[in-house]
Length: 144
Image 1: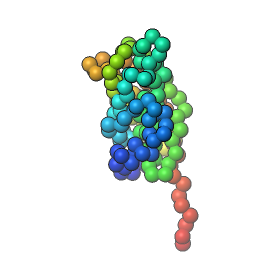
Image 2: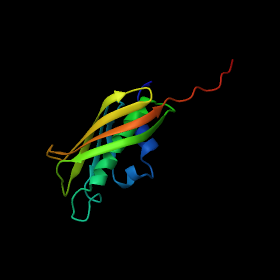
Image 3: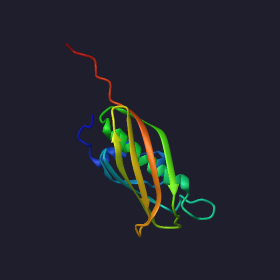
Image 4: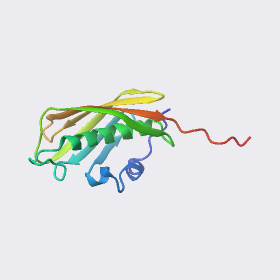
């Protein structure tokens, strides 16, 4: 299913403009169906006590896994998140966090990615797994 990966700026334009990804300051650094890297600032994504919000970690993880799934069926395919789970190991109050998503499986109808989120010192903050339902693009009408 996987086609050549589009340029990163095209991916960003497809996913980020005017979305939660944009509002949370998530940036893609690398993006292929098999391996994705993204960053997110802690500032603006904290809970009441001033720590990185666990839901913000889930948004970063789901963003990376969903982009990977979408790229797996690029161009014109569909990717919809069906399951996410996360274990929060520690927290952080400032800086930039980095998520690294690695494909577990890239199938015909399901993809799964493991996402490890770390702080600037490389300490693991969160481990998440996201599963997406994927569907390849429907073939266009025949011209013959």
